[in-house]
Image 1 (cartoon, rainbow, N blue to C red):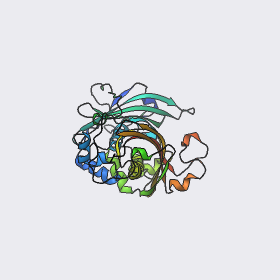
Image 2 (image 1 turned 180 degrees about the vertical axis):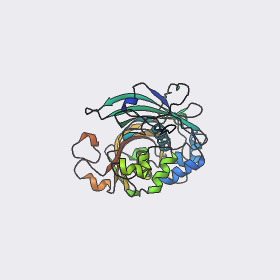
Image 3 (image 1 turned 135 degrees about the vertical axis):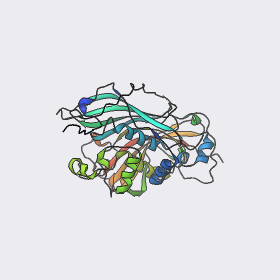
Image 4 (image 1 turned 90 degrees about the horizontal axis):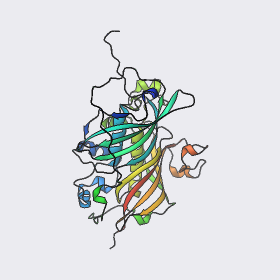
Length: 363
């Protein structure tokens, strides 16, 4: 029909070439409302992101925006150009937060295609991209690689914007923002959670007791707050025809954030910063009504000077069953799903998380 347009976004396998760079169109200023809504939804106990007074005491100009909100924004901004046609998000790789983002900063993102690998059947393939999230001043506040499973073919009807060529991505080899690269000021908090650097030993396993039941309107609102445009997460008619669950599937970045928040009172109540995330995956999906639980295992402890140390946790999120209930069962709770034959259908996320933790005060 003449004059009728049917815009389509994202890309299929034939639309990707290694080396391509996409400047994503979303440009969002982080305001107090966004930060407050994220905090209310995830109830994270990490003091650096919760308390402006605490953050200023560490040398930040103000309370930094939570790194998990930044990760969700970066992932979601990239959907428009990378994964709106994707079958599944497969992996989080080498996630870093080298600079702090503050309320009032305006964020944009770009993604470079690192690799394109068709499957043996040829009907789909795996695309790996590196996404950089930067402020209006060019500060790199989040950088990560991810893999997505996409269908073969090419997207028809994708609008071509007449914009200048995208700028080269910036990189920052630092793992900590400047205020945390030297001596760390003592905490002025009147009370705090348990769990300092010295309290964790390699091999420790923590079963976090509280669960989180996901609400339908809640997960859709948060998905659109961070600008994730994949209809799998909010379009019921699309999902009845295209979703493996035949209904709306909870966006994986939210599942990750909820699971990590469930660990926070037990392992990051004295954390200073999220150093990074790696080797992450979503083995199974989540739908509204599922209840999430978290379990952690200490993989590594590393002294980082007189004031702090870095602890690496392997965090596993499960649905409708606690990690403790699954721990002694077949499959191995902390064994990556791709590395074994006996799968755990209740496992919904697994990831390694490095955290800079304060040492015990010497008084």
